[in-house]
Length: 354
Image (cartoon, rainbow, N blue to C red; front, side):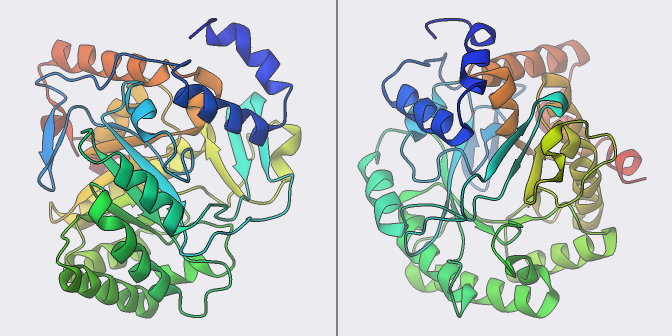
């Protein structure tokens, strides 16, 4: 970094959020926001799904939608990076403005609507980085005008799996009308059956994760867990943004439509995570997402049931050195308590679910 992020942030916050996002991606690609590279220790390192993760902290989908800066993002200290969401055809997404900072709440509301350049562009970029190492996953979705949404996910696996470490099926964005209906039992079973069949037919076996909403009760979460186990899905990502608006929100933009992320999402997403862990009974791995902004937050997600943790919105407020700070802080705490990530996973799930 050229200047400490707290000095730059007021100038960035004076700009429109999407412009800042584009500038950030450009800065990463140019090496202007470098970092220590993937951080590791015996306490942090895990092998999951046959993949070695140097540490459990990942960059969530949404930041690098088009796989433009995966390697640069890995250098910030993340153990893995997830690109996307990518749809088969390019699409512009919803009308602007569509991203709103809730500064008083350290939160964001977005209604982007899967704006991306499509499979072909992402495939070319992921293929170009082959051999560079690092864990880079791809998050796939359906076009807004898709008649057969499950077919779009199948197309995503076929187009992108060979160039990615794993594939996440995002069925929980609140910004594509009707998409969350894929979480209903009949639609979900159809989608998972077709997705797993496509994986078998392709000859390219990559772990598949399913990303769900936080706005589900324990019964619905348990049903999704059983569907994942039945179809051989390896991971459940809990969770996406929320449609809820906590009464504690104090920012002027709190009434905007879209998905809420950031600090207010921490509690509901962690409770949903714990419910999923208890339902899974060790049969699939969980990825904890929502409101992670510190080493203590990451620790809590792991204790609630996550084997891996992701963040995105917190970097808007904490800057590009936040991932390294979180990973180092988590490592210090684990060392002090004589724990590893694997040993901590799920320790407090019952308390969180209760």
